[in-house]
Length: 423
Image (tube, helix red, strand yellow):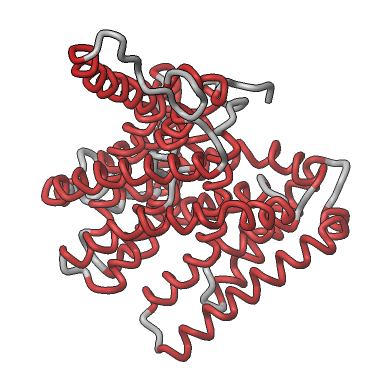
C-alpha cells in the first residue's frame, strides 16, 4: 500500500508537471519536447530529485508512446498517397538521405563509435520531426503555401524510410549474424510490402472489420490490434514501431479519421511520457562532454536540411522564396531522433546524451529557422545584387540590373510563385 501511495503521488506530480510545462511552451510558441527532455534530465539518474517508484510504469508508458506515435503517423496517410509520394518525391528523398544521414555517420566514425553507432547516429540526424513541423506550419499559417505539399512529400519519404530503417537498426543492435540479420530485414520488407498491398487492395475491408459506431469500442479494438501487431513484430525481431505504423496504414476513410481524433490525446500523453523516460535514462552529467559535437552536428545538419528543402521545392517549380521556406521548415528534429537513440543507446553510452543535446538544440532552432531562413536569404541576395549593380552603375549611367528568366527583378518576378493559395 505504501509503495502504491508513493507511486500515485510521484505519477500525479509527473503528469501535472507535464501539463504545466506544456502550457508554458504553448504560450511562448515553442515545442514542449525540449521541456519534457529537460524535465526527465532533472528527475532522472544524476538529477535533482530522482523518481524511484514510478520508473517501471514510465518505462512501459514510454514503449506505448513510441507505438502510438507510429500508429498516428500511419493514420495520416493512405496507401495510395504513400505510393504516389514515393513515385514523385524519390529523387528528393535520395538527396535527403545523402545530405542528412551522412554527417551523422561520419561524426560517429570520427568519435570511434563503430558501424552500429554510425548507423544509429545517421538515423538521428536524418529524420525531421513531423510533429514539430506540422505545428510550425499551422502556427505560421503556411498550410496553403505552394511549398507545403513539397515539405509533406519529403516527410512522407522519411516516414517510409523509417519503416525500413528501424528493422535494420534493431537487427544491428541485437548483434545477430549476417544470415539471421538478412532474414529479419527480408521479413520486415515482406511484411511491409504485404501490408501496403493489403491496404491498397483491401483497405476498405480491413477498415470495415474494425469499424464501430461506438467510439469506445473503436478505441479498444484499434488499440488492442495495434499492441498485438507491435508485440508480434517485436517477437520476430522486427521493430514494434513498424508494426504499429503498418496498422495505421491499413486503416482508411472514416475509421482512420475517427481513430485519429480518439487517439490524439493518448498519443500526446504517452509521447510526453516517452520523452520524460528518455531524459530519465540519460545522466545530465554526460551531456557537457558531448555538447560541442552536438552543436557542430546541429549547425551542419540544419544547413543540409535547408539544402534538401531548397532542392525539393526547386524540382516542383517553386520560386526562390518558397525554396528557402521549405528548407527552413525541415530543420527541426524531435520524436523519432529520440526513438532511434533509445533503440541503440546500449551500443554506445555517449549516444543518448549526444542525441538529447542535438534534439534540444534543433527542436528550439527549428521554429526560428522556419521563420527566418527565407528573409535572411532574401536580404543576402539583395546585398549581392546591390554589390554587382554598384560597379556597373559607376561605369555606365544607363546600366540596368540584369533581368531574370521571368523578365523582371529576381525576387519581384517570382513573388507570385510562392504566394499562399486556399488550403
